[in-house]
Length: 465
Image (cartoon, rainbow, N blue to C red):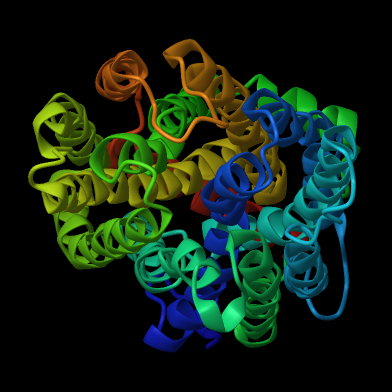
């Protein structure tokens, strides 16, 4: 029997798929890690312009994400409907990851802004080509309620491994004298290195993953969008994730600026070192939390444990007022160590819950449309992220941050700390309220699976007549 037809998947199948999360996590986060330090601090570009350069590509994503989902769902290639696009996206993403950090320094501020805007649009297009089928493949690997949590635990494990051992080194490597005399020169070399990692891990996942072959009628994109946006449970789950992302990413760049302006004033080298250890701690604790999340999710259900994770995140941001302390700079690692498992709860469980939503959709439509759901889900997330990137530039300005000043004023530092504490809490509370409304329990999913099995049995009986 084909292993993919079983509810339980082998270690190798889950591992080969999950390695692709390393490429995904680099493409999803490298701009958030390096854009503001390089373009604002290194090149002196207005943070508002960089915010626009990060948010405008999401308008293009509104076209490419649903289109990619529909193309993937309708593909009938001999290699599958997911893996060929992952292969192409990994190669393009690797090349464009390098180009992002090579702006001609002779250009004016407007010229550098245009360069970054164009390369960002191309980069996020490549990311769409890779991530939409990659996420869809994860949703369809298993139809077992608990095994889906296991699949997403593997994926989150590799995602956190990238966050622990790869992402933290980005800014730190840019400051190494072996790669150049300053951040701008170092970023050019580091971009090539990380572009190579994107290509390698993405290609490995595309080649060695496995996928089911589905025989079903093709569906046009307008019908696919109609079915997807009419699914209220899907929209509810998407909004939970979007709220978490907005709450976290709106203040994510502030970790760097709090270190640079408050904990290590105007010391880029020590700030880069602190950033390295912050990200490493964040990633390692995320890795250690994954087996616990997998166990708790299967033991107590996805919804209750998701609420636990959201509560943990909500408690840590008020604590950050005391943990980001210039007298005890490494206390910030306590914040990273506790927020990270909370976010792992979100990534593991909401991804597993999204696969359940796809089963409900199949019961209603008779179609497997993981690509459509994955693409619209990714689009909604990207829209949320784009709003955050735009807002984050304004947050710095509203707080009084001056990118040309050597030392920031006490008022601006106070405002940065205030934003960091209160802005995420608002969105975490909204996410918790939405989670309470999520209706798909294990018992309901078992009923849905029983109905799907009955439909398939009836279809087989009809073919034999």
